Structure formats: structure tokens, C-alpha cells
Length: 445
Image 1 (tube, rainbow, N blue to C red):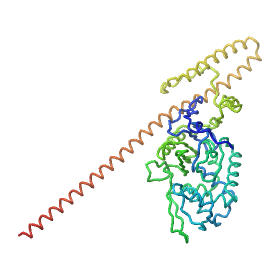
Image 2: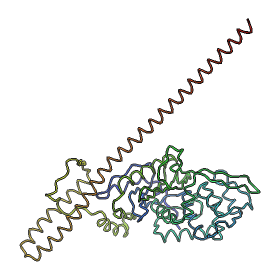
Image 3: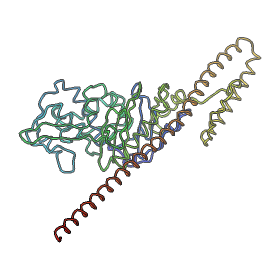
Image 4: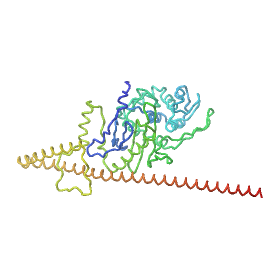
């Protein structure tokens, strides 16, 4: 397997979904690559370098957990630490500092894998499940291929850096969606912390979650987040996968190559806000566009498919349906202007074809009328979608403004409380000084 090209990994990718016809503009994010997926149908709602190869770091452990859960039906079975696990338990690696021969149940190992993000436990689970890390990685790659992953190759179970260990934001969304079928996976990723009972080698271990969006005490807490998995290496930077649900919609977000943990959390919140604002009640299957390598045969086929998924309007706007006065007319970008010109040219051609067909007889006229009715129906649906997106865009801005006001109110309340505490302390100190001085006078008297 060839190693991934570093220039590809660190490329500055555009937001591909912003170029889709009649699709809402997505948020700007700090990460190199991101994908937002509708869990109900694997439709991509937002993509920024979504199919580009990236180093995953510890979000690899989502796939590790899946392979273990597929193999191990008895979660109370005992896993014994061997040299395989201990070789990944070094200083700057996330590990539990185990001892040779120390034992845990499979479920305890899964908890330490997904919550603590223990690399030593990941390698030990790989050996326990498949006999070796190499055999385990082969199963990871086979499952990834069967799920439709096109930019993924795993060489270990923990996510420690290797040039031939990579994935994409889109592929991680696919893998995570598959993982959600396992109840134990859903349960563990929702934990705010885990407690591992003492062993003959070590006392009780406690590990808090690394996922800021599920922690109510975090400023990045996001209501509806089911859980997630974080990752970090120097080569991968910060990575994050999260799942959130509101109403009947479940979204999966993957953000790879962010400058830090907090930046990753902010990117994920912006993606979820975008998804839950624009897409409830909308047919998201239009977002099932596959990203492919530029110039490849797959890209040409995808471009043809994209024309069907995100078609340009080929008929003139109905003259009998006025545009609502309260709907703002967006300023056209150069791309939109070019699209409008194309639509106008197509409209003119359609009118000439209608005029010509009317002279050829009633049979041709009937066929043209039927085609026009279908086109007008598609255009009406497109116009309705645009109106929904315009209204929801204003709602999103209002929601963000309200959040800013709420945070400001919290900050002001904190400042007031601190000032009150300081005032009380000063008063107590003055009172103490007064009492001390009175005692001194009493002694002199």
C-alpha cells in the first residue's frame, strides 16, 4: 500500500457543497477537511475536502471497536496484557500504564479504548480478537471497503501515525454510521467518564471524556450530542467525529486537521447548527453526491450524476407566480451569474422548440406540453426549497445572536458574583482589623 502524499493531506480544500445548485451555503471552518452526513441515508450535507486523504489519529478506534464488537459476543471475557499492548504504553502516547499480565474484561477494554483513547488497549484488543495487529488491520480494511470507503487504509488499531494509515472525513462518517448499529458502542461513547476497578497491579482508574460537546460543564456542550471520539497526533492535528440527534434527524460530523481541540469543537457545533437549521423535513438524498479524484473516469460519471442530483433549471420561471415581496433577492456571485446566463439561453431554446413543435401537429404539441409540465413541477419544488433555506438562514443568524447574548449574560453574572465575594472579604477583613485594634486598646487600658 502506497503512503499518502503529504501535499494532499495538507492541501487547502474548498467547501465543495457550496458549489451545488440550490444548496445552502455552509459555514467556514478551521479544519482542513470535514463532512456532515445524514445518518438515515448516508447523504452528504456539507463537504470540505470530504474525500481527501487525511491522517485520522485516534478516531481510528471507532473502527477498532466495531471489529471487536463483531467478534466478541461475551463482553465479560478476560483480556490479558501482553508485550503487544505494552509496546504502545510509552510516555507521550495515550495509555493506561498497564502491567504485563494485568487483566480486564472486554467491556472494560472497550471503555478505555473509546473514552480514555488508550493505544495500548487498542493493540491488545487487536491481538485478542484476531491473533495479531496485522491480521486485525486486514479486517479493518476489508470492512471499510465493504462500507464503500474509497480513501481509507488502516495499518494499526490505535491510530498512531504511519504513512500508510489514512482515511477521509467522508469515510469516517460511513464507518461511524455503521458503528451506531451496536448498542454497546452507542452506550460507551455517551459516557462522561469511566471507572475501572482496581487490579492486583494498579488501583482504581478513572478517565473523563475528551468529547467537549457531551460535557454539560463545557462551554462547548451541544444539546442532542450522542457522543463522539477525538484524536490527535502531530501529523494529523486534531480530529473529531460526533453524532447528534434532534427530532427525527441524526447527523454525523467528521472534522480532520483542526488546529486544536477547541477549534474542532467549534467546527463541529457550526456543522450541526447548519444541518439542523437547513435540512429537517428536506429530502436530503439530493446530497448523496460522491467526491472523486479530479480528471478520473469516476469524476466524469459523478459529474453526470451530479447534474441529475443538483440539476440546473432548464425552463423559464412561471410568469403567473409572483415572487413574494418579503423574500430577499440574493446578490449573484460570478458562478451564479454564469448559471443564470446558461438557464436563460436554455430558456430561449425551449421557447423556440415550443414554437416549432406547435406547427408540426397536435401529437407533437401534446408531448411538448407534458414535458413542460414536468419541468415546471421540478422548478416549483426547487423554488420552495430555496424559500425554506432563505427563512432558515435568518433563523440561524437569530439563533447565533441569541447564544451570544446568553453567553454575555453568563459572563456578566460571573463578574457580579466575583465582585460581591471580594466586597464581602474586604468587609470581613476590616471587621477583623477593628476587633484586633479594640483588643489592643483593652490591653493598654
